[in-house]
Image (cartoon, rainbow, N blue to C red; front, top):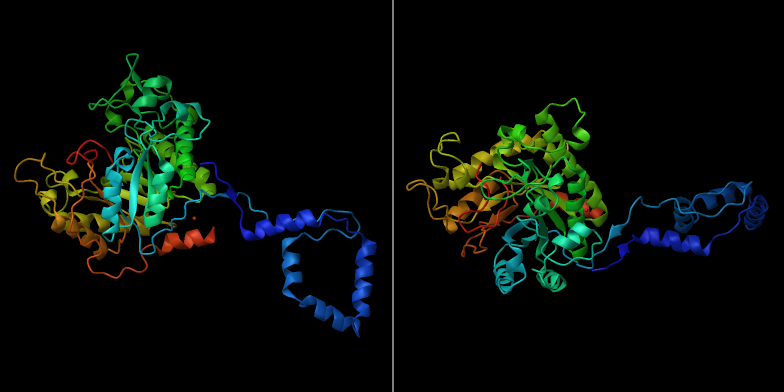
Length: 468
């Protein structure tokens, strides 16, 4: 996976020209050149006018190279040197022109026999993207990398045994690859290094499901997860999707009993809630900046309810996070809303269109207030929530999935992802609903030309992500 850093054409030209023309420029040489030019013209004034627009090569050279002082001997140096280069993974997959419509794949599916089945499914539909676990819910990195980071090396597993072959297949079908990186839910790292986690009574604290979280205040944790993201970018993934970008659910009711550090936020004048929001938001901003040189998009999964009001206990501000990502992926699954929690909707799982329609309106209002809103790409429910009480759930088949999609389209949201923890997706769904979508991905496509919740969980078909 060692591939070169890519230089744009003008930079290559600049460096080549510099190498070939490291010359000493003196006042005498300039005078001689000027006299020779004048002799070739009839009048000095005419010659000056002709020189000003003689040919485009001279103009380009003037823009490209700094003009040395006539009194000094200087090297001819390029003026247009970029502040960073762009890494070229060698994987050529474009951002879908009509927007991303994708599915989720576990690493076991992506690295096993099911992968070809998922590729065939995407190829046979109007879907065009795949979200693949690169760092899973336990904290394991799912393929061997070239990273020199000791933590990355220790926690890597050869689940996806042939990542280059996987990328070749995705490239052949032009399936847009998104790397899912679970950030602060990390049982492996938390137990390896309790000082990076939350402890209680001398032991690493775990939630009722037995999962540990690492500390969002820790910049070591930030750096570790960004290094994982770098490895995904070098492997050819075109987007990094950060999941579990938050403190543990219910953190506000137990933080006084937990031992942890606040890092650089310890001496801040912010209250405890503001500190949490700052830490989570700062991580996202840091990650996006660190990954900019790889040319990848950055997206974040977030609780759907966060669009309605901030979740200070877990550090999520929908608006603040949205300002620092290319794509925001909320998870407003109908099954995840409580009875009567949405206006006019008693049992949300029974009303997929109304739930998604209401949510989309709320989210649009929030994003419209931002100076630089991201692309909205919600997760949709492609599973049956039979764990809900009788009478409060329904089977999710093609009509229920299409109802969610229609609600998005009715609110001018043209990107989405489908969640099914077992990666068993409903056949026969019309993902475009007969619409000719032409501009859905325009914003991110333009970014590329210029250079570029709910948390997902892998347990079962029915138990997809955390309850809201």
